[in-house]
Length: 297
Image (cartoon, rainbow, N blue to C red):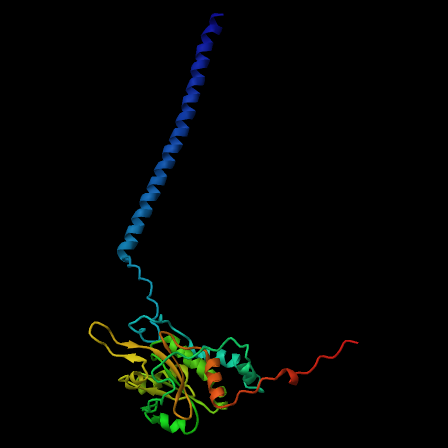
C-alpha cells in the first residue's frame, strides 16, 4: 500500500512533464516558423529596394490624347459638332446606294407622284422670283467660273456651305455628288460656294477625293452677302454665315430658295424643282389611262 501510494504522484508528475515538453515543442516550432517568415519578408524588401535603386521607377505615361480631328475647328456659332469623318468611305456607300438610280425613268415618275411627301416648299427670300446675282469666282484650280456662262447651258443649283470646317456641310456635298448624274440628266449643274481658299479645297480633294461639280472660293463672303447667306458683324452682334440652297432657272431667275443653320439635305426636292422648270416631269396617268382590272370569272 505504501509503495502504491507513492508511485501515483510520481506517475502524475511524469505525465505532466511530458505534456509540458510537448507544448513547448509546438510553441518552439511556431516561433521558429514566424522568425523564418519575418526574415524572408525582410530579405524580399531589401532586394526590392536594391532593384528600385538600380532602376528608378518611371512615372507612368499619361494616356495619349485622342488624335485631333482631320477637319478644322467648327464655326464659332457651334451649329455643327466637328468630328473626324471618313469621307472616302462615305463616297463608296453613297455610290452603292445610288446604283441603278438612273436606270429607266422610275426616278422621274417618283418625282412627279402627287402623293410624294418629300417636297419642301421654298422659303420667302429677297431674290425669289427675281434675277439671281451674277458672279464670277475661282474654282479649286484657280480658274474663273461664271454663273452667267453656266446659265447659258441650263439651270443651276447653287449651294452655300461653311467650308471643310463643317462636317455636315461636306457630307451634303458628297450626297449632291452622288446624285449629280440625275441633275445632269435634267440639264442642270450643281455649284458650291464657301470661303475656303482654292488651295485648301485642293488639299481636301487629295485627302477625300474631288467632287465632279465646281467648288468655288468666296473669301470675302461678297457673293454670300448678295444671296443673304452672310451677315457681317454689326456692333455687339457677330457675323453670321448661313447655309443656302437656290434653284436658278436658265432664265436667270431664282425659283426656289432655302437658307438656315443646317444644310438642306433633300436632293429630291431640288431635282423636282429642276424637272418642273424644265418641263421634264412625266404626266400623271388619268383614270381613263389606267388599265382596267380583269373581271373574275
